[in-house]
Image 1 (cartoon, rainbow over the protein chains, first blue to last red):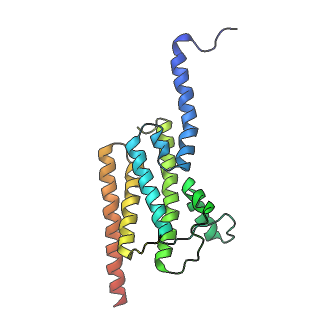
Image 2: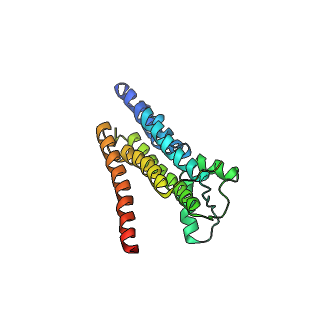
Image 3: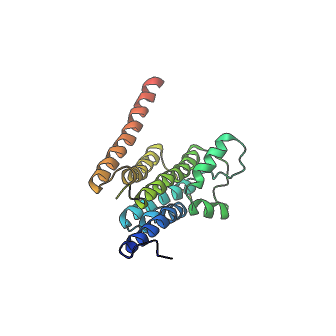
Length: 140
Length: 60
């Protein structure tokens, strides 16, 4: 049976395979570790800036005694908070595992902290979409 | 470890980091990223100041 890929186009086929793998790997790793989706695509400075920005926002939220939402919130606002928090990937998983951010929101700064962590997660969703656009060649 | 930020310093930190992410993700070239990041930062802080003064006026 003849080889369906002509000899001359083999490098192009390999590049295409790598590219299609990257469209899955970059967003996945970018979600888990903010900025990593850019770093594995050799956008080192962008990746580092995203990591510092999203990581700092999340860490500051925790230090301000913000609240971490869980999946079984029940209330619609709790569910939305959970979706936002979940965007932070490993940061959220570690915070949940360490039982951080479980206190009640007792004062204004703690409420700011809660919003910081939700926004950190939402910003990471945007960063994940950006990593995907780089992987498919829509963005440099 | 806990931290106590004032309303303005919290808004400043929020504006700084959100603007960096917006700049990187919403523009193509480095120059455009920096410009858009600065624009977002100015809009965030400008919005805080305008809203603050508006609330001060409403309260009077």
